Amino acid sequence: MRSGNPALREETFARFGYSRESGEVMTVQGVVFKTILLLLIAAGTAVWTWMNYLQGHFGLVTGAIWVGMLGGLVVAFATVFKMSWAPITAPLYAALEGLFLGGISVAINAQYPGIAVEAIGLTMATLMAMMIIFQSGLIKVNDSFRSIILSATFGIAIFYFIAIILSMFGINISLLTGNGWVSIGFSVFVVAIAAFNLLIDFDFITQGANRRAPKYMEWYGAFALMVTLVWLYLEILRLLAKVRSR
Image 1 (cartoon, rainbow, N blue to C red):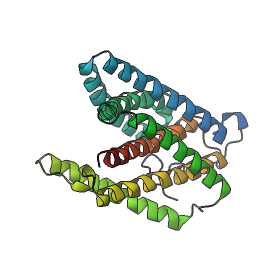
Image 2 (cartoon, rainbow, N blue to C red; image 1 turned 90 degrees about the horizontal axis):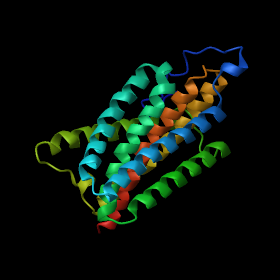
Image 3 (tube, rainbow, N blue to C red; image 1 turned 180 degrees about the vertical axis):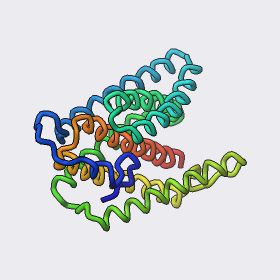
Image 4 (spheres, rainbow, N blue to C red; image 1 turned 135 degrees about the horizontal axis):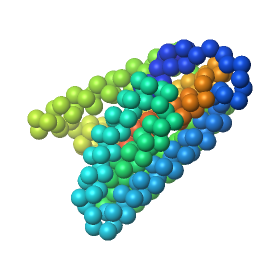
């Protein structure tokens, strides 16, 4: 089993056997509860960033974006390589991503009023829709599905990496910066891939609960979902900005 989410690799849960202590193991309900906590933490720091913008503290907003982006990357890598740290690093990651997302959102919202609320609503709606699809079995998360989504996710990651390198030399790729229909279509495709990654994440979390993984893996599962949700929100925000700019 594989996931496009780097936080949920094939061996993530495979290393755990079955625990005999029912009170000390991972549960799906525990992951859901902790995911809600992480979302609230991220919302709190995002609101703090937004309030500083409204008060004219633009330097703090810029600083929040950089601290959130770089700090979030460091904490994310630390969590992936040391999963037992998740009860501490997952809330820290959520707080840092809230700073980053809040700063990015307020900047784009200044140009396109109301776009941040729309992006949040669409992200939450997508999350709910993917949960319903997963629970209903409408889309089967099998090896073929995982392989397709994993390949597409890695392809997008490589494309973004190349785009960042080229931008350092003043070369912009229209698929990312343009507002033409091809560019919009590309963003729709990326949003769809991010959404499908949620299905794979749900499957991995279910597998972890079935394998009776350690309790701290609830925090790790919630962290993994946050990684996908952050990506999904940013892509929806990008898509809406392209549509608004036409």
